[in-house]
Structures are given as structure tokens and as C-alpha cells.
Length: 309
Ligand code: GDD
Image (cartoon, rainbow, N blue to C red; front, top):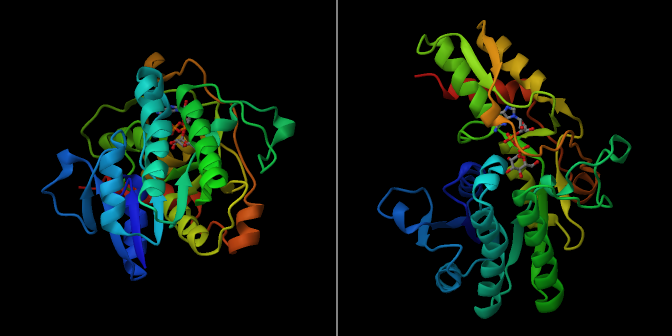
């Protein structure tokens, strides 16, 4: 099959590309002009989410059976610093891509990735989040993903595009950039373990609870959705249980075998942070048979190993 991946050079995109190549697909990936000239494992197509014409050219070149739309601004903290850019990339980029597919007169299956963050703070009785839960976005990133979700739904009904929305919760694993909690903690812990840093680390809000899934399980879900998903309500991708950020920190420290002093960094505290988010993956399991396979401890150990010299 011919597949086109936006975000192919990113964290989840990199894992997805490896999996698709292993499965024997012909993989085209969107790259930015600044990434031209580098060696990529997929066939690179230059384009920009903010430039609809470049997306149409890329889509026409790829002639894909499936599009995985992962590209965007994924950092919730950064969305406070760059709200308009976050909206432009996540909502505008999704609109540009879907419009490009319509203009190209192609009808691939499209897996578009939004986020559980669009639910925002829900009362604990409303957990686990499921297909009926109501969005309550409280930061620019969540609003951008809610808009992307609604755009996908609108293009599906108005233009009969075969769009399936994947709505993942937090995903972790090797290759994630700084700016997300696990790499932010693991990079400091490993610098301490390797003697490159004094045993002091800074953290943000440890009271928040999130639902963590290994990125390799998440991209397996994307591929299963391309094969077996049904357009309609979004598919939640999650583990089904909440874990506090404090617990993530404790596990990383235990796995690395270090002793550290912890201080709160006000710069890491957000103007508004969803206190608790966890979901149910019942619909995904029902339609595709998916369930998470990689335990949290394993994911965290693999992240720590990725910081070994
Ligand atoms: N990034 C970061 N760095 N977060 C910290 C830190 C720190 O040093 N200390 C505590 N936290 C807290 C954040 O305040 C938040 O409550 C939690 O750890 C998780 O933060 P992130 O890893 O930045 O992820 P997120 O939950 O805001 O969003 C992630 O999950 C969404 C899906 O639920 C991202 O991966 C999004 O792209 C994704 O859509």
C-alpha cells in the first residue's frame, strides 16, 4: 500500500514509519524545507502545513491509499507561549491537508490525530473519558485540537472524506523531545547518574494525573485504525488508568538508581493544567482488537536507556 505520513520526522511519526516500512508499505513522509538533504528512511516530500498548495503537490505525488496526519504542535506548555502558531498548525494545518485531499480528487483513508487534552478538567465522576464525554478545552493546544476534530468531522460529512479521528492520551517512549514530562525528567536524572549534573532536579506540577501509553502501542493503534476503523466518533487511545506525575518521577528515580533533591520550577507550572485525565479504550478494542502491550516500567526503562552514551 502507498501511505503518506505527515509528522514523519517527529516522535510518534518516526515510530509509525518504522512500523509501516516493516509491514512492507511504500512510505512517503512530509518534510519541511529545512529538513531537505537529510537521509530519511521514507520517500521525502517537501511541504508546509501552512501552505495548502504544497500539501496538494505532496498528496498528488504520493497518491496515497492511506494518510496518517500526525504533524502539528504537540507541546501543551509551548501553546501558551505561541497560541496563534499552535492554532494555525493544528487547526489550520488539518484544514489545509483535508482541503488538499479534496482538491486532488483523491479518496484515501485518513487517520487524523487529535488529543485527549481537548476534554480539559472533567469531574472525577466523569472518568474514564469515553466517546460520550464532552470537550471542555482550557488551553490553546486543546482548542486547536478541538477545532481540528471538528474540521475532520465537517470534511467527512460535507465532502465524504474517509476520515477517522484517533484521540490519543499521553504517549511516551524513546525519541520524545524535551518539553514533555518524561524526557524532561529522564534527561535530568540521567545527567545526574552520569555525573554531568549535581543531584538537584527541577519539576513542574507533580499532582496532575495522566493516562500513559507507550508510543509503539499508540502507532500500532493508528495502523489498526487504518485497517479496521470505522468513520464516526473518535477512537480513544489510552491505557485505561491514571498515573500521577509524582509516580512517574518516583519510578524514573528508582529505575535509574539515583538519589536526587527535587525543587519546583515556577516556569514549569502552567497557567492552567488539567488535574486528571484517563480514558476507556473499549471502542478501539471492540473494532480492532487493540490493547496496550508495553508496561509503563518498560517504557520508562527504555527512555532512560536512550540517554546512555
Ligand atoms: N512537560 C513537563 N515538564 N510537564 C511537567 C513537568 C515538566 O518538567 N513537571 C510536571 N509536569 C506535568 C504537566 O504540568 C502535566 O500535568 C503533565 O506533567 C504532563 O505534561 P506533558 O508531558 O507536557 O503532557 P500533557 O499531558 O500536557 O500533553 C501530552 O498528552 C496529550 C494527550 O493527553 C502531550 O503529549 C500532548 O501532545 C498530547 O496531546
